[in-house]
Length: 384
Image (cartoon, rainbow, N blue to C red; front, side, top):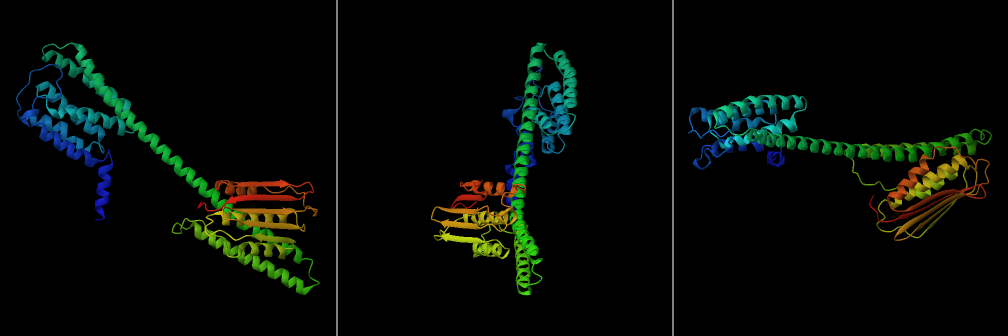
């Protein structure tokens, strides 16, 4: 049973060899049926000739090579052309002559290099065939040979169109795959930025504070314990993120840790930032990715408060409703660092993109008193 789907898939492919092997056998058999004898392509007006041994050879040369037209398109076309020339010069006019445009389409659509050379060789070979048929036949006008050549050229054009269509589709798939990889890299970069920046910033601030607590062993021990706890939490979050990069890991959005917002606030407080935290309402039963995005908004905002407004009074307000989550994080601008404009802005840009994907609103503005206020409205229930 495992091989059946693979066989069916090969049959669905319009250019698969399985399509052309039965076609080759069908042309071979149909050419010998009484109703199809001498009813094929007729070029030059030669009278019909009864089938003999050379007729069998001509039919075989035209039909059987189709089975290998995908792997050896040029050889297939050359053999079919030889059989077609024998067919017309002898006056058999078999149904197998239908293989000529099929083989020509194969060359135009499958050959990677020297397609123009193949067209020139075919044209050069057609000229003596047309001259020979004109002399052997009743003297058909040259326009008949020109018309046949144009019809065959149309088959070449069909092959070129098929080739271009496949190339455009391959390019489209390549671009889709590249865009997908780029989006995934951007998502991973945002996750790394959120995790690493927040925890490392907290550890740096806590370590700097510990330098001035050597005379107070109790407070020094508390500060170093906070650094240790923050480092462990960073390791846990990074391990979790690396698990997400595992191909065997699920692709669903990762929910924030239980009590994550309060844990973020407590961690920031231990780093020396006065934070007032207010949470209103209860989260909806199904928030989709909204709770994770809200967590990231608070995390990034508190990280920026530590870096650029250390020591300033900071407020975090989160409101839950059935349809959305509202987040406000602000500083009052009382710190000497409150007016700092350092940083790449990548974190805020990532937050704006996260919220925008869910159809929400995001703003980050400096306040008249020098503080900074981040607002986000995140619709709940969206899975991604």
